[in-house]
Amino acid sequence: MKLLSRAPADKYVVWAVLALGAVGVVAVYSAVSFLAETKAGGDTERFLLRHVGRLALALGMVGLFSLVDYRQLARKARIGVVAALALLLAVLVVGDASGGASRWVFGFQPSDLARVALLLHVAFLLAKKQGYIGDFKRAFVPLCLWTGAVVGLIGLEDLSTAAVVLVSVMLMCFVGRVRVLHLSGVVALGVVAAYLLLLASPERAERLEAYVGVKLFPHTDAEAVFSSQDEGYQARQARIAFAMGGLTGVGPGKSIQRDFLPAPYNDFIFAIIAEEYGILGALALLAVFVLLLFRGFLRIARHAPDPLGLLLGTGLVTMLALYGFIHAGVAAGLLPVTGLPMPFVSYGGTSMVANGVMVGILLNISRQATGPGAP
Image 1 (cartoon, rainbow, N blue to C red):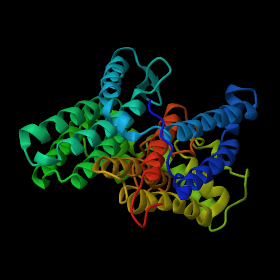
Image 2: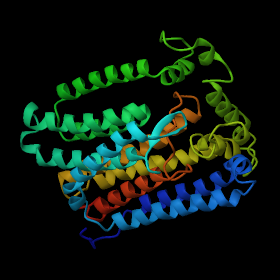
Image 3: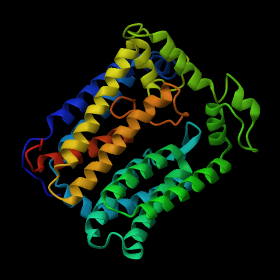
Image 4: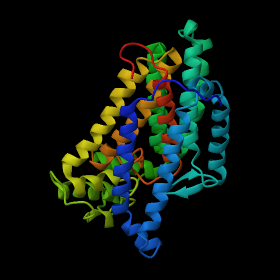
């Protein structure tokens, strides 16, 4: 990899990531107590140190990839996509189940490699094909095939991650001047595919029905959908956490709902933050993601030195922000339960490292930014 030494990276993005990481360490330490009691004899520090180690690795990826020229990464991204496709296929055959879904293979979550590699490769193809971007056969079909293969395989294992990846790619394509008619066709196909995946998985369908409060599918169990101890349990406990937190919260480390929420250190970490620090603390955390979104769109992508940087910056910051906002929406009961972690805050492994790589690439683009408004 070619290392690049240019201007300093965007300091606001750096501070945003450090703030998210610091909040995550404190929140995970509080939320992980029940897990420690059941799996480690009360050794909370064991899980805290594991989380800190993964966060340190992610921050290391931020620093490393901020020095690697994003153009070099984009040129080689197809190798990463092919490798990710192979691993996603392996998950279907020998994947390890976690949380009711098979997402892991060999202790690794291939969807995290796939989402980063796909953004790089799609940005590369979009920039390369700008001269004939409106051509259906030469431009749109290759983009559609690569995206469809990755998103389709991810969707078989994790529909919510597939949806976030697809939305991020679609926004990149829109910025890259792909015809709206072509993108509309992708949206229609995505809706049909999502419906078929819901039909194929009663668990997914029941989760959606529990959210809307209406039975929509013939293959689901009505008792599971409407039971307070089944599909609606997580969302209900998260709302209780918000209610108990009120405006200013019950105080650090004083959460009660961490003993009732499944995976409070990961899927519902935002609910624990809202309980302990209140609505004001939760909004302050979301403001960090707004800052990240603002800097990513209006400073880094806008002042990127070339179309590749513009497109890649758009896709990266979109994906990071979507993960954060969707996680918060789920915890607040505004969206159906998805299982998406909050970047740099939730307890995580490969997802934490993947987010570090994405931020590092974003910072590398910022180091090469041009124009009077450049960071």
